[in-house]
Length: 332
Image (cartoon, rainbow, N blue to C red; front, side, top):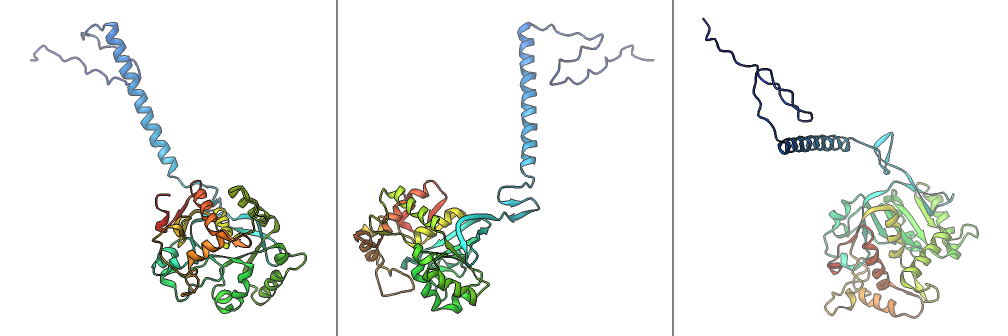
């Protein structure tokens, strides 16, 4: 025999985003004041917004983790860099513009005696691309400067020095991209300038090499950039641009991040306690680096403005991802 009592059916779960279901028949519901109703409605609205926000974030996070095609990738191969065209660099002998992918992390290695004893070779070689200057060797200095040479920027005056060690530069370093700069009268393709004629012979002997020269338009651009940054006309001020100048310009075009090794700041040589090192790490016991910098900076005619250029580099570093590893740049 039953007790004569029965439990009311369990109420349905309330919906967070809708008005609550009406109470089941036979149940008693406390009357709500207008203020309480408003508070309940506000709570339900906030709960709905929060839930929607969490769901949106989760969906966006999932989408962002999916592989996509960026400006540095090919649609058919997400891991391969897009081949870009760099105007102002003409291939020897056909004059076609430089084409290659960007480098995400580059090491620009100075030829300074500051590299001696640095033991940075392994760090330098760990970068995707390594840029060197003129005829600075790696053989015998591997521990300090590394072994890899992705790009070598060379002055027209240093081309004969490359020819003196052809097995090293043109056979062992066969994968290196050579970028040669010089005045139009030396580098002219139409009039076959003296340096360009030498490069043609090099390509006949080593057809596998990748050799490019700066066009006259690019050389003028570099002159104009110097004037814009310093307020001085290069020719009228008797200034010669350095290979470091052309290397930094190429690095800013070619690299997303630039790490500069062995280059001192513009104030270093004016400090009383600066160290004395060779002008070039591979020419020990010869010209002193700071002595050379100061002499050229003060020269009325025909001087490389090494210190002025470093002031410009410091300014560029504030706008681009350029990191100078030498301690003299600390706090700049």
